[in-house]
Length: 294
Image 1 (cartoon, one colour):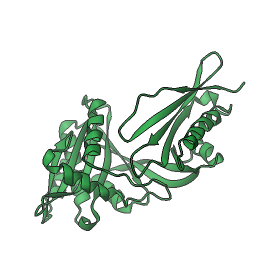
Image 2 (cartoon, rainbow, N blue to C red):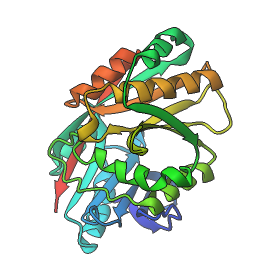
Image 3 (cartoon, rainbow, N blue to C red):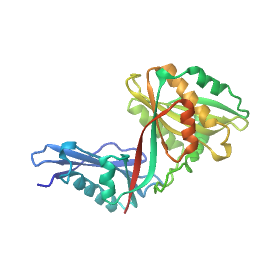
Image 4 (cartoon, rainbow, N blue to C red):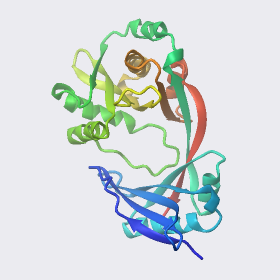
């Protein structure tokens, strides 16, 4: 008997996206799997949807995943989306499933981990002591200070040329409202956003940034996550990315020295992978992003 697929109400809406959700179950209500479809709503990405789903291992090869995928893809088409993306660990059954249903690989991501208990803080201090004439670092926790908000939002275009393979990712358009909303959303879920910014000293403008999200309760069995790190093209070549990320690592070490930090980088993004290597990050696994063109 085919699974019963029920659309659910998902309250996880943000200013930049909202989600649809479906549950697959037996006739008696026993859950078999679920899928979420994130519909991006901001300018520059309103053509895109992101898929995330799972089926209990014991229930696979019974059509559960296909039924859930069909529901999500149908909804994406009905909403006028041009592409659906999904991610699976390289070599996993999820990747095989997506490829068999018309998704094509468009981007490879390298995941890496840094255990703060193993680092030499002096190494990071020496990085920060290297001269960098014309620039200085500043940092804040939570929402960006008013005096930096406008130039910080403008600096987000540094992400526009990050390697994205063949992904139809679009362009993320940032303004002060979006920057503030993103920080508030992280705080509302109980985590802490720490941002390091590179400032062009003579103009006082932000030219690069590195974001680190730490567990708000300080539990060291949890993990922190580096979000974006980027420098505006006209200010690259000065090791600003390395300096910002080093400052973020030192901050995390001072706050919770037993914590582990995670990061993910496009495998073809050689400059950022070199930064991660220099800071002691060690690769853990590789994932592939797949795309279905509608």
